[in-house]
Length: 270
Image 1 (tube, helix red, strand yellow):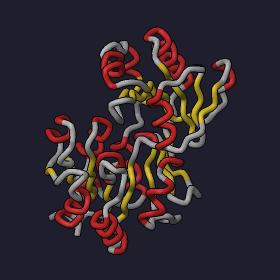
Image 2 (spheres, helix red, strand yellow):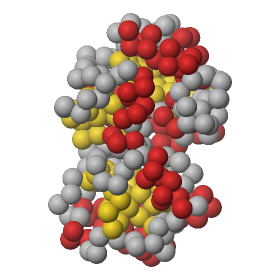
Image 3 (cartoon, helix red, strand yellow):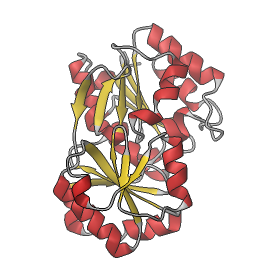
């Protein structure tokens, strides 16, 4: 068994069960790993505001613990005292994503680490759900100019799954080549800096902490977890993972309703 020193864990569909709970077994395994000196890094598409309660429940708030947010757009200490990795979406790419969303007639919002911004005055129910879950206040603005000086990380289209499926199939090749375009949930399509990904952020953080790539483990279930699953020393697919993740992973654990994270930590790290 490899000597695991850093564990990167997705939240939704991985750390949390379908009731959005951290089970006692998962909490215990995470805390045991942390007490052993393993860096447990919550790695999510959510902004920092959407991770706060999770970090606190796990007892990981510290200037020596780390969290990766915005699908790898940012890595920082869990007490928010230090940002150690940041890859912003360029203004030009955001404008292209906005133009594409307008052409497709779908909702798009821009996110910084503390707020979301949109030009759309009408929001669908999935927008309300998204911003409630990640605890991100939404500001409706009248023009692009009002957002230009914001320290934003990503833009995302939000809507019904079948609508987002169709929109994803129509993203222009040029935009796909110059941005990292991924799904975090069935209702989101996210546009990020080409160099921003969960895997890139995980390895950059590991390097800063003196952890070798082969000493990392990643656990996930969705398309946006693919880079960290591929690049970790041990890539673990949840039992409920999408086929892409199951095929890319080194091993598979049980699903998020049956303590999959706990079982993986116990088997491969502890």
